Structure formats: C-alpha cells, structure tokens
Length: 250
Image (cartoon, rainbow, N blue to C red; front, side, top):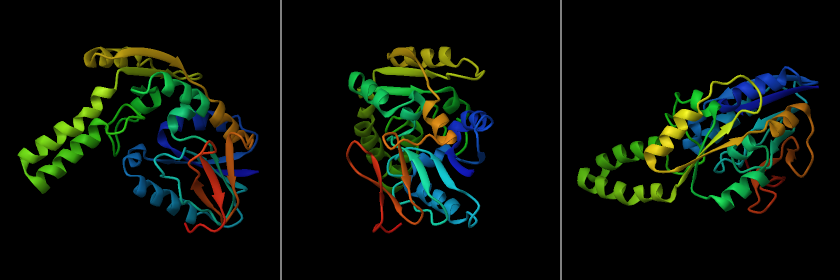
C-alpha cells in the first residue's frame, strides 16, 4: 500500500518518525501552519495538492488535520479515498483524542495551548507560538493595521480595545509534552509567559495515538472518516464532526 500524507507542518516530527515504522509507504507533504489564520486559503492550498495527485499512485490520501475552522470542509479527491481524524482541530490530535480535548475544554475553556512542535515552527506565515485561541496576537496586529487604513487611528484604537476583551477570558496556559522523541524542553518559557500574563500554568502529556493509527491504517469509524474518491468532506455539526457527502460540490 502507498499513502499520500498531507499535514500541517506542526506535525512534521511526528509524521516522519511514525512513517519510518509504518507498515506501508508514506509520502509526506508539509503545509505551512500560518495558513490556519486564513481557512479559505488553506482549503484552496489543500485542494490544489489533491488535484495535483497522479492517477492510480496512492491507495489513500491521509489528512493530518481536523476540521480546523472549516479549512478542510469541501475538500474532494478524485484519485483516491481521503482519511481524516474526527476532530475539530490539532489540539485534539496532540492530546490523542477529541474526547480528551472536550474534557479539558469543559473544565478550562479559557486555555492557551502550547506544544514544542508549534513553538519550533513559530516562523513562516504566522508568528504565533500558541494554538487553539481565537484571535491570537499575530492576527490582532494584522487586523489593527487594516483598521488604521480603513477607519483611521482613533477608530482603530477603539475597535482593538473592544476586540481585546477576548484576552480577559483566558486564564490558563498548557504545555503539551511530546510523548516520544527528544524535543528541547520549552515548558519553562511557557511557564514564564503564563506568569507574565497572570495565568495558571499546567503541563500535560501528549499522545501520538491518532497520528500513529492514521499512518498505520487503523481507521476505525468512530475516530476516523474515510471519504470515498470523488465525494466531498463536509462538517456535520454533531458528534461525528465530519462526514462524506456525495451530492456536495467541492
């Protein structure tokens, strides 16, 4: 079997590590993490890569993504089936399951999440070192520049003051440890950032189980969606998160 794996670059270490032990051939292609700030652009980039796949080369295309603000909604691959975890975003993948992330969210909804992978990939099209927080500082700075041009500085300052209220809802910084591999320990830097912001700091163990099972071909229906070739990946707005749609247009 031969699989194509399209993945956000924040999983680079994991996917290359796990692909080396996978029973099948995995061809990996990384996509810039900064595109998460622009879901329509990310979707277009992923669709371009799907459209460029050669006929009859791959048995399946693996997507190391979640729904990711609907970035993957509408994707279609005509050359092979697509397989994607049933998760909303990459935090669930880092934690190993959608259920674990849901439990964390219910207990601490105002959380900034940090992982060694995300910190190492802090450059590119986004300077953000944390994930899973709507309205990160990079996006806010970009919005401010646009508001100054459109509305003038005084109005831009007022709009940013109102929008900045999102920060008041965050009380916790979590560093998700890599479960395998020899990453540098970035936890002290994250703890310092939490202290600067007056947040609680916590360290949690990560898990590779979702990515490992994705590349190893263990695609149970409860945790993974398999989209047949020519069908469209669609959000469900329920516990399934994603589904395949025959009648949807890409």
